[in-house]
Amino acid sequence: MSYLNVIVHRYFCSMAEDLTIIQTTDKAAQYQSLIPQIEALITGEDDLIANLANISAALKEQFNWFWVGFYILKNDELVLGPFQGPVACTRIAKGKGVCGTAWEQAKTLIVADVDEFPGHIACSSLSKSEIVVPLFNNAEVVGVLDVDSEHLAHFDETDKTFLEQLVKLINLA
Ligand code: SME
Image (cartoon, rainbow, N blue to C red; front, side, top):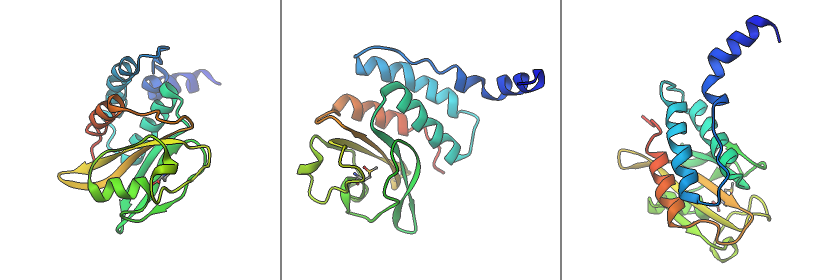
């Protein structure tokens, strides 16, 4: 890399390089460390896709979940947005799967065993549990954050609390 490239790279990518990943099994501590960093990462950037991409990457780095990403509401369907993990289904209708149900009910859903959830959409047979957090613009659901784990019962009220706090930082206007 040339000297100029190094300067340019450092200037434009400083925040992403500075992401601090903590090694602990304390889930709340992981969120408390990561969420302010995500806030710094997306502050000053108004491109939604860029921010959702960085949020997915930051969450994947800290938690190493099987799949983490966003579905965005377009023409009355949830359409796959930025994510980290294996390829996933691209469109989900209202009321379908965990994502479409979280959209319909406008609330966070925690699924301890996806095989027990009627209509669960299996993008991968390795996914065992899931949490889906709606994104709101005023009172309207405009997308969801979806997280999948290859472990049963991986998500709990701590994830719900912090992920709901996190999605409030996203400017969806
Ligand atoms: N399992 C989700 C579909 C999306 S993938 O898990 C990435 C659902 O049932 O809505």
